[in-house]
Length: 505
Image (cartoon, rainbow, N blue to C red; front, side, top):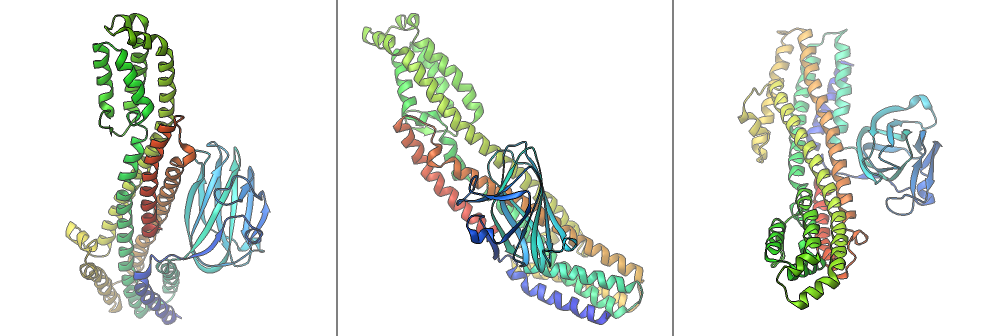
């Protein structure tokens, strides 16, 4: 039995090492939009849920979950379930949800269900948010979702399950085999099995070091890509009043009536926004707007005050214009700035989401960087930036040589146990420490899923913020200018989103 276990472990490792090059290939094995009858037939709604033609994210249908408890199950068994992804919408930000994810070989036997993940929390808005979680079960199983909902309802749409990554499936199989090896060794010392298991563990340990490197590279890539320099810059300009014809007209009217000191005050107020003459626009921020809006309205009001324009040294024609258009100009300024403020609030909300994502990615990078360095030490490489740089090298030959050193370290340990120079207790301790380090790597995979969910949701919000029906302006020329910016933003965001999905999803 021990020899069989050891041989299986060796075979698992060989397959794992061969599959590393293909570890990031994705394949959707189940997709459901809760729309057609064929979609509905793939689900058993046990209680607390129903299909609805309202609140769909895409298409014409969604799955509605009532307040309280609910449970749904797939009627089809799914092989090699890897990552579960879906979109969730709550009836309000106060709505709390807990979703337990379970799998079983038989959908009709309640005792056979095993929980493989959990998603809980609330959405910060009544919009759809993306969620991703790793199931990582290589068996052919049914999928079950159990819901606990408080303070409202939720809707689920666009659910999909990706095929399990080969390295993850084999790693889980390897963990199971190692557990069996350790269990057998409690009763029967077999130094050959110890040595074989340890050599195999060395190969797997080196492989998970490379997996850490990959996730660190993904995080570094996201940290750069979610900056979305072109899209966010263009989006920020869309909230700058200087770019719009209505505002230019208001400024022109005010300057025509204003005294020299009022003109100087106006120029000083507009300077932080850019250059109105060349239409050079700065990215609008909430602070810049707050410092500008009320003082600007005050200048408009005081400039068109009768006492002010009669003492401003302007000609009779201009005084008549001021008398007839003062209230009209102020109302136009107030209405236009209200439209700009609505646009700015959208931009500010997007900026906050982006900053939150960057903060999470930064923490993830730092934590994973620390874990990788600790894993190298546990793998016998010792401390030092040089070893870390070798493992992270873009040169595959340099990386392979570094990983081979880890493999050799485990081989030396194996030889030590095989010639009986170390105790069985030491073997078990060494084995447990190595496998514990490998299991911790899985935590980072789940954290990456959460970050990816946030990025997907952010792209969705960004997309919707530049949809044609979100144009806040009433004047046709202003609407046209907003749309010209929006066209550029849509292009930038689609390119960025496509690159993200290809590289990280």
